[in-house]
Image 1 (cartoon, rainbow over the protein chains, first blue to last red):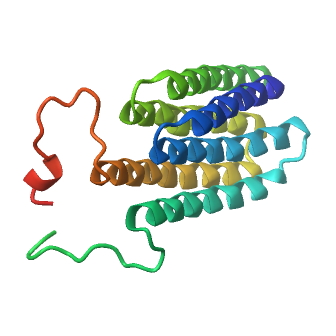
Image 2 (image 1 turned 90 degrees about the horizontal axis):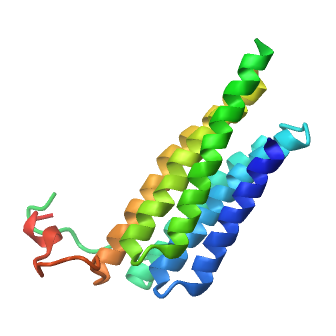
Length: 95
Length: 112
């Protein structure tokens, strides 16, 4: 069962990679990379169970956090063209 | 009891695999970016939840289940946040859904 689940995960990762290569816009590529990262976390967990070593879950935890930070950083670069900026100035009487 | 747990975990992992395939094919074949976001959301939350719950049934009551729950909570917080930031960045970047009929800007109308 774990082998089948990891095969399905690998297939989805292949789909996501294809989208990342094809993707007409930069946002499609980032979306595909985000999906790929989430599936990496899942496949590490499933392979840990497949091999009878659930210690792999620590690695999966760290991957989950790194993936989130990485996606947000890439987004900030493409949105503001700069990593150091604090974002747009707040509007008058806004939010 | 063991057989029941095994059956439950096989059931959840099987449904999770169906969701994985559906989301992956949708990610490849949907026509524009926002519909692809929808397909990616299925694999990011639905399939993730089902797979991790299936693994939890296999692990039983132990520390492994706690780690799995932690991974689940992190992914539940982070992947919708990332998708939201992505869709907002695409919208402010001037990308419109393919089926949008009117040219008004909902972000401006809401007064942010």
